[in-house]
Each structure stands twice: as C-alpha cells, then as structure tokens.
Length: 232
Image (cartoon, rainbow, N blue to C red; front, side):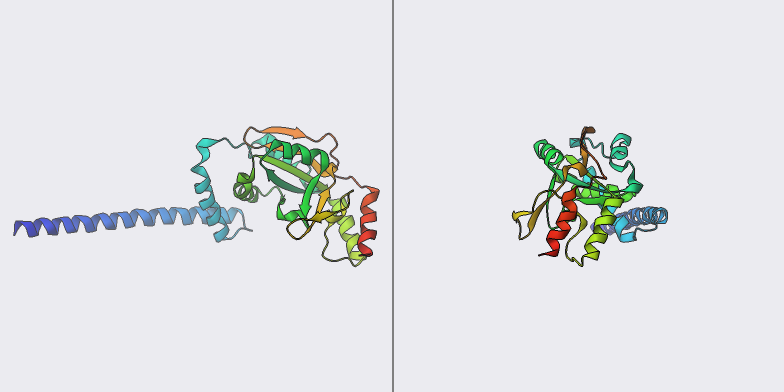
C-alpha cells in the first residue's frame, strides 16, 4: 500500500512540474510576443513575421558572438556607409578576401545581369540594416560600399525607358568595359570603380577609402552603352 502512495505522490509531483514548465514557457512566449509587438509599433513597415525572424536570427548569431567582434553598428561604420544617404543609392556587398576587396576598389564591381543578386540596397532603416548584415555577414568580413547618385540612376533609368530598352537596368549602363563571356548563364558586367566608395572590415572597424570615388561620375561610355543596346 505504501508503494502505491509513493507512486501517487511521484505522479502528482511530476504533473506539477510539467504544469510549472508550461507556465514558464507561456510566460516566455508572452514576453517575446509583447516585445515583437512593441518593435512593430516602432517600425510600422515591418510585419510580425519579419520581427520574429529577426529575433530568431539574432539569437542564432549570438551563439557565435564570442568568436569575433562586430563593428558594423559603430558610429564610424554607419556614418561611412550612410553619408549623404538622401542623395544616393547605396549598396553593400560582402567578400572574404581583402585582395578581392582591393580589386573591386581599383577595377570596379563585377556582377551578372544585375548586381542586386549580391549587392544589397540599404538606407537609414536600422532594423533593415541589421537583418541584411546578419544574413550576409558570413559571406566575408570585408564590406564593399557602392554609392551611385540618384541623379545618375534616374537619368539612365529614364534613358533606357525612352529608348524602349527592357530587361536591362541602370547598372548595366554604368560600365566602361564591354560585358564579358557568360557566368551562370548570364553576361558579366563591371560597374565603374568610381562608384565604389571603399570597403570596411566589419570585425575591426577598419575603413579603406577609394581616392577615386565619385558617386556623380558620368562617363561618355555610358550613353554609348544605350546606343549599343538599341542595336541589339
């Protein structure tokens, strides 16, 4: 009889512990949901799903935070990336080797069809910056900054439209070299190096500037590219 009583006590204790765990889990879920709702109230353009994905990504990244530092959100880094943001289209691209970063700085940025595949548009939306950085940072610690003035973007986008040229983008025009061969079933373009502002080692915060940077650069070759596309 005493054994049965002990078993009943153990069963009740186990049931009580399970209930306790459920209560703790519920409290954590309520906290997370309330935090997400607060964040979404601050950033109206973000959905609850986006915010949840951000929190999960942040938790995943934090596991590895002890292995390296990240200076991406430092004032010097953000000021360099977002300087004159209202007047520019700004893109970031990650690469592993500094040699590649130096090559892009001096020769320009190579891309297939459209550099939107590997270069991410950014703005002063801090949440958007963090999400994009955390998703791409493992592609390399060197962060290439591409800046093109809105005037240049708007002008050549309009010229493409006037010429009735479709399936091409302004970045396809902003090159002084002809497209090369095929890579992954697409032509390889090379954005003029004047649009490369520099690169950042986001682990150390070191910034390397491009002395030839000019976001308003407008080469005679660009308008010739429009004429070439007309004849294709």
